[in-house]
Image (tube, rainbow, N blue to C red; front, side, top):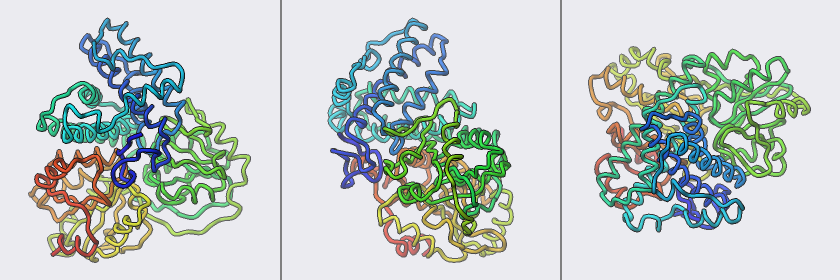
Length: 540
């Protein structure tokens, strides 16, 4: 086993026996084999498109299959086996339909039928440093960076396509780069740097498509108070990111006497008019993904995992967990065809919360339209020196104690500064009352990691209003990363030329020293230090 795609990777180098996330060796090698076969499907798909033949089902499958290889999404070798066979089936059907072929090994690879034999094939195709001996360490590092960025793009595109929003340029670019990772043995560093930045450009396009998918389907988010307590009665908890899945569940539970609670990255769902119209979408339960063992165990109802981040469930609540889409875990019930009836039946059989649990409220729903609607006032406050600086403190959360940095940083930010936040990193401080500056909340929740496009548009709008480039704004990015969507967002920021980002809690293990030095020298990206030192360096 060799896996270094996430921030928690063992010893800051790689997981080589079992994933820190709980991923087993056989799942790791099967996922690498799936990516290899998806490279072949991508190549045949591109050749078919040159002849005018487009297969939308193959494209959507490709997104879901790649999504299943992200950290904390799918731990089920049987499900990965299914994806492998399906990828080959789609590839061969496209060959016949379009009368195309290729001599590339991955476009002619046939998986073993027996799972044990398939695992051996996966071990032969495992993606690790030895895979890039011909290209060299630095190109190998960039290939991994591109691959992990493509995983993030696939996740965003999957969410968007479920809401009937697609970007053909993104799909074609994803397939083209995936083919190049496995096929192009060029050792030209400049070429691979350009391809890494191309991932950033494609990710910007797909985040725009996802933003449009969310807002055109559910309306523009509006600032909304969300209770953190609970209602007496039957309950279902929804975690992950997928708003379409939440919407379908809300429709199917309407009038059944079940309250729906969000968890983790689903908190921003409460700000969308098309979701908050459901009266039984009550509140938010729990915090970030790494606390789910305690939080899921205590929740008195079934739990739906729509995307990452799933942790291996404890036996005490495993029977109450349901997965959907790319998510999977051995022995956990998987839902398909938007049929939530097994989940709903279990919720009706359970007692739920025995009494009302009071709790504080938090605000969400400050997407770009909500923020930009008060942009003129914000600009006046900056010009009158009542707002000194903006901090974007957000990204992925995780279990390492060093991540307390982000809580301490927010607590130490001076009272004349605003804090924008997004993604699950905000759960370190999302319920803190930081006050206001003349009616403008000092803590502004922009949304999910999927809503990074909103943050970028806010920054671009402010730069236009002040007639300066983004790097000249009184704005600092203090980012935390954990998985592959964060990688794609970082590449987007680099593609946009944004500098002076502070990244933590550690630097990605898949970046070689030369690649890290290139990023530092050209984009002034630095690791976080201490809240006091970083604030001093930023504010003077």
